Image 1 (cartoon, rainbow, N blue to C red):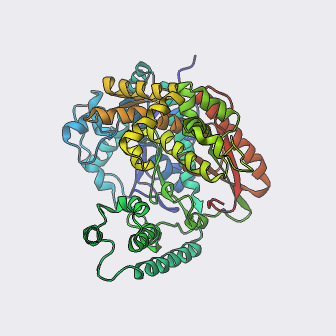
Image 2: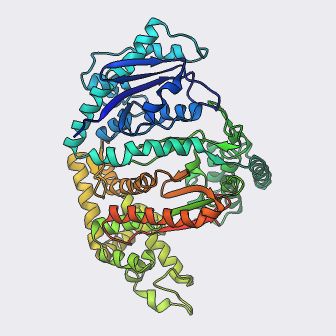
Image 3: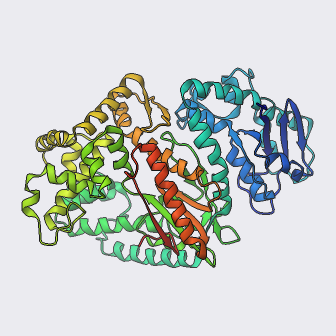
Length: 570
């Protein structure tokens, strides 16, 4: 078998966020320990970069490949991202304000990684800042050239060592099937961006501000700042309401029949629309503006969090409220539509498959409502309170069924996050004693599920590790100090991590799909109108195949598709 050519690649840029028309300072390529640096004609390297038979070893591949895509239209093929692979190997992320000792263990910066693999004793990265703001075309100094060479000199050796470690840890498929191929998909998604209607956003922002001011005027002027936790706490406590923080306001509002408290809760709900999603959202302190000159928003995606999920920034499109009008400001270009899909009952399906809980598996395969099914066994009165026209075992509109279903839904998700009688009792407005009794009954309704969660919690306490509930077995290492913290992560991480792998598998299985956005279990494409039916079938089928592989049960989790002229949920 012919040995694959491996090329270490690095670029130096004038900043962090490229714009069309920008140029990089240079590119370095290392093949067989022969390092070539090109400054004047970057396109000379295009054949190597776009040759899929050559492995490109890059540290922080998304960053470098994005710059090359935006500035030169180069699509880098076959990437081994040493930064992402190190994250897979570590299964952990470095906390903010980490000590030097912690950085030595957890940092994925190249200088720390090379020292950890004993490829260098130390590496001086201080010269990196000299490239920032440097005029395009400026010839590198001797020090800059040597620094640049060092950035690619050790990449092939690092790749070989990482591959050995990934094999030993059983994580090679996470790296080679999911994370590395995904770099190209993410870069393409970032570069494409998503269409945006600025005028519509401003209109929504102004209406939100008017609504906020209207709600604010309804509150008594005795409090000079209704967004001050201290002032608000003092005011409500004088009224005999045990107000502790803004986070408990909604819970108190359900208990106390107090008009001021009700008005305050309404006001707080509108605050985020004015602050986070107001007109100031259109400005970015790092990029300058959120919207590029071509009318598209290009967010930055971080590929791996602790669970394996994505993160998004500049701007964070993953946090746009699902039901808000703001999603309506994201629109396709002329002659195109959005094709989107999300995994229906993804978390429930993962828990059902991994635990072998037959009640849930059968309900999901029959397309019945899992929460209603659980409630019908948990509450003996369920069938007696059935109303005319009830659609059970589908989700129904019966007045009393809706209450009991919501209770079951709270428990179904809460137990996966480690909630006990106290938290569940608070959520269901039960005493801790009654909540404990209900949970004991719940364990008998779904015995395999509760046993699986407990086993996972015990395993994480004992080993300080947790694995995704799928064939990939993505590993997460845990450093939390308390056993209850480890137990909670042990219960939830297998589900969250499997969900991340499922979504990523769908994305890498559609390498040529015109992705514009990924939001947890949602995927969005922008396609020509006459191709919408083709892509909706392709997207749905690919997502369901990914779900089938991760759960091991065909048809358990389905993808629900839509065609839309905006991201707003109907």
